[in-house]
Amino acid sequence: MSLRQLLLRLPRYLGSSGPPRRLGSQSLDPVCSVGSWHGQFPRSPAHWKQVVSEAEKIVGYPTSFMSLRCLLSDELSNIAVQVRKLVGTQHPLLSTASQRSLAEITELIHTALLVHRGIVNLNELQSSDGPLKDMQFGNKVAILSGDFLLANACNGLALLQNTKVVELLASALMDLVQGVYHENSTLAKKNCITDDIGIATWKEQAFLSHGALLAKSCRAAMELAKHGAEVQDMAFQYGEHMAMSHKIHSDLQPFVREKTSDYMTFNLNSAPVILHQELLGRDLWIKQIREAQEKGRLNYAKLRETVKAGKGVTSAIDLCRHHGNKALSALESFPPSEARSALQNMVFAVTRFS
Image (cartoon, rainbow, N blue to C red; front, side, top):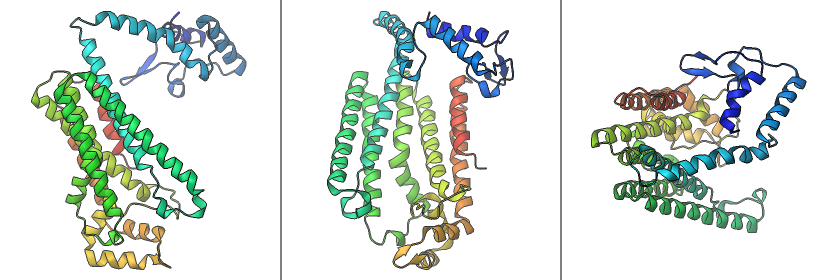
């Protein structure tokens, strides 16, 4: 019996009757949505243990987390065999499997960037950070791991056998490197906190380091699906504005969280700080920074309260929602579907502040 067949039968073992109820567009299947289902769910631990025992007898495997791969192996093997039979045909499923590969490649590039960003500046180490040799070894592992992921991404791109997609992802990688290099060069300056960076410049840098990969990957997905230029442009716009909205949402977290540690630092080149500086004026911003310095160090808790007292945070929230609305507008050009609803929900998740 396959895992899918097991899941179809489980509601009967759980004591439910009839098909799963629905709320809006989401199925309230008791197997998947225990917290939202109000049916006859077994409350006794002994009852639940009996259900699990019955399930183990059906599938022939123990149902522990470590054996989850065993549960899925038969199902995935059957799918792989069927897909292999389609090779050489014109079935659209094959082009979809190219799009899944593209998503994996995009994630590989993104993960490689995060790994490389984890490299520690050995010149700024303190005794509490750990032995120097261990930190040096960690840097070597981070470099090699990131390079390994990038190499696999490049290999996957070649296997897609689509010149335009390769060009798009290669240019996205170039944008990433340029954006991160600019960020690091700015942080390396001793007077970086006095740099006069406007929101327009911030948007350009944020697109390079955070938006280009998602935007160009969305365009590449439409290229693999053989859509025209207009559809590709809409997909690009969704990816661009979704990424910008996500970036601003991330920058806002130190200022909108209910509980924030007094020792928590934040980027002085983040969106709310840049907007605060732009609205306040350069001279007053420098004065506020000097007032927040204590014994040669910046008191981030004090400076955070200063920024929150201004209009930079609310302006950043408005900007986040502006990009979110742009992303939603781009989605309107696509027909209604579960996929479009999922993409819309992603926008709602990063534009909600409460």
